Image (cartoon, one colour):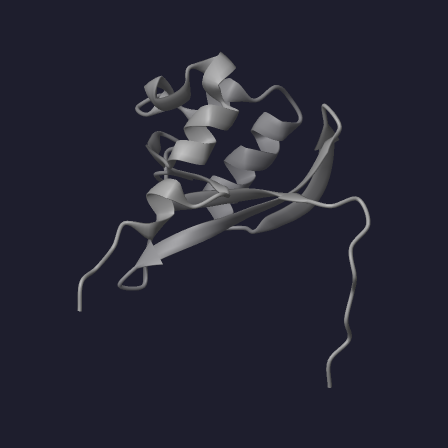
Length: 113
């Protein structure tokens, strides 16, 4: 089976930082979304430097205590769901991932049994 680099062109922004907050990966969509801030040049910089308070303190806590944070935002007429979560490799904590994707203002909600 051929392994593909599916996340590179995935139409959700994916950013990964290590346990110290250093950005180690951005897919194409993340680089485009953060183009004004440097895009791919953000790799190697600290994610904490990209956030003002109180977001900076919240991120520090998430990095230290391996916490998940999920919320929605609206910016420039676009609504997004932001999913930030610790990631692990062989059960060892290696950092945080943020996946950001656009969502419609009106969307169906299903309750399944």
